[in-house]
Amino acid sequence: MTLKMDQAELAAFLVTEFPQVEKRFKVLSVTPDGVDLRRAVTQSDLRPGGTVSGPALFGLADVAFYLAVLSRIGPEALAVTTNAAIDFMRKPAAGVPVIGSARVLKLGRALAVGDVLLRSEGQEAPVARASLTYSIPPRS
Amino acid sequence: MTLKMDQAELAAFLVTEFPQVEKRFKVLSVTPDGVDLRRAVTQSDLRPGGTVSGPALFGLADVAFYLAVLSRIGPEALAVTTNAAIDFMRKPAAGVPVIGSARVLKLGRALAVGDVLLRSEGQEAPVARASLTYSIPPRS
Amino acid sequence: MTLKMDQAELAAFLVTEFPQVEKRFKVLSVTPDGVDLRRAVTQSDLRPGGTVSGPALFGLADVAFYLAVLSRIGPEALAVTTNAAIDFMRKPAAGVPVIGSARVLKLGRALAVGDVLLRSEGQEAPVARASLTYSIPPRS
Amino acid sequence: MTLKMDQAELAAFLVTEFPQVEKRFKVLSVTPDGVDLRRAVTQSDLRPGGTVSGPALFGLADVAFYLAVLSRIGPEALAVTTNAAIDFMRKPAAGVPVIGSARVLKLGRALAVGDVLLRSEGQEAPVARASLTYSIPPRS
Image (cartoon, rainbow over all chains, first blue to last red; front, side, top):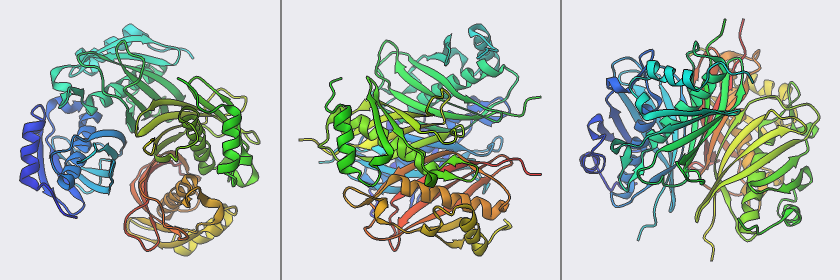
């Protein structure tokens, strides 16, 4: 699979397109399967008991898969999430970033489908698993 | 179904348990099926094209169903989301709060299951639909 | 919403397009929201403990939503399921048909989205809940 | 992770517990992650256009993950599916069995969570991807 955007291009894309959130994210690598993305965990992401909020984990999965799709189709597309399913499995480690490893399973004409494993940095057992579908606008 | 918490009690619960986010939410009503919850949309919730971010919509669905479960079992339980599936269907209206209507479909010993329809305030067609499962800790 | 197929036309469509399975199904009604469909439960649908198999319930949800979409767009389209999420909530009643009540939440140019509540005939509490997305081929 | 059932024991379990369907399935291997299971495709599994029916693919995913869980906890448990989400991505190859590769991501006290990739035998690109949650009854 040829790549249309590398790590540096994805990082620059985050800065211009997601100015509200880009500081939280760091593109770790573009992998043969997709993209590895790290999300910092701040005080406002925490919930009672010290756990990371569901929306914060969902957002990481969503952005990781989005970047994985863009790395394959390039920055011109305005893809939108149409569907997501997420399983929360373990409490994330306290005070540690979470890493999402996204893989692209299908890159069709109209839909991209894939999934993301989320792990606390330095830990093997996943904290969550998400599957996502993006609708890709017609490309000329 | 007997209720354990009414609208005012749920609102007070939000203030003490979710101080990071409670200002965004307003409990509109406790319904026979569940709870209606409104979420304000701020600049930081918006994404390119003026749409409301996926995590913001996910968070609304998650909190709406959580409150719906608590209205039935009371505040003592520390329930956690184990699974969520969400379909994003339409672009939310610009500058308008989003309302989540949660219904509880099952309230079992260990799991609560339900779904949430999300609509821009004043509009009939839903912007998203979510189904959620919560794990309920053992009650004495 | 104008209807393109009524109860009799959907029943005839089942006979010609799903000859392997049509005898199990009966279209009960075309509703303002979608379609109500009944599935007979046979010995081969049962699993240890007398429960109805997951694939049998999934198949009912899938066909009910498919017919609900066709009732709105007509029989010419060859729509396919792209995504389904199903929650199994209660054990179905023994020896009783299961009824799926499908509602169409979005009927877009390329995607149809909706959900289905499944109940044992004569019972109020749902046995399962499914959400489904269909991809609709381009219409001329 | 220690295994409680090997390939031969899972095959014998299928024969006694799933007499309605066991002839369709063959346990290919117990892997470090889970189980690989093959499902034969018969005429009654096909739909218009020669595609394999959704319920047939769902059933393969469900049984594959079930056996993967049993290989870790042993045959005594009567686990039931509580949730499944499935993405249908490509049309399966005609006249070819489908193989489900299940991996166990969490094996908790009360819930088991994992996912399954489905491929037509001999092909790399997946035809579907499913995530599943099983409820595990209390073990003594």
